[in-house]
Length: 214
Image (cartoon, rainbow, N blue to C red; front, side, top):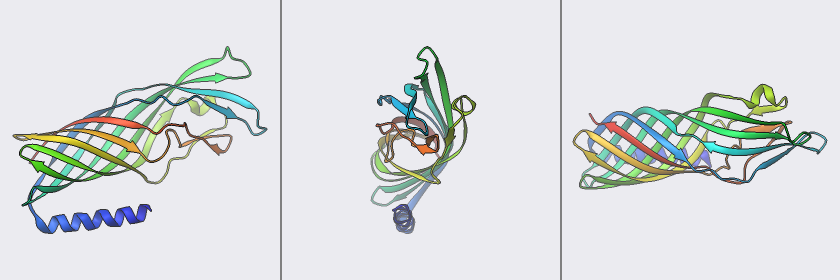
């Protein structure tokens, strides 16, 4: 599935490049907000006994920075790709079920390399666009490591999501508002006692970005 998506993306890039009459590129910075309200997770140990309850408290503002490249055709159809690094933090509450008085507030911070590829159309200074985004984890830190003995992180080599949004070009400035969704469930990188788990919700992000065109 992922290989097919990558092949389609490169075909679109090639076709748009042949017809392109305008090339825009430049730096871009942005921030994102996330509204995650999944049900609490009950984590069982190797013997099947319930050991922990994990609750999502809050997903803090995320930040990203990188470069964008836009190829525009004569019919105002464009293809835009970006490469940027993002950072996001999520806070959790961990309760030991054997002793409900033992409650800890923990957090995880993730650093990802992101490659969104969008196809869109311009109407004057306004742009409408959408496409896919490939994400690869490149690091991070978790309070769960060391506190929960049998906790590990297992990120996919490449995670594919989707984006859709609207933008505007004002002089050299390029503004974007996007809505992003993930095909996988939230926190599916978590492994407790050798078993992968995930919340019942999929992460949704609202992203704002500002770029400078050359």
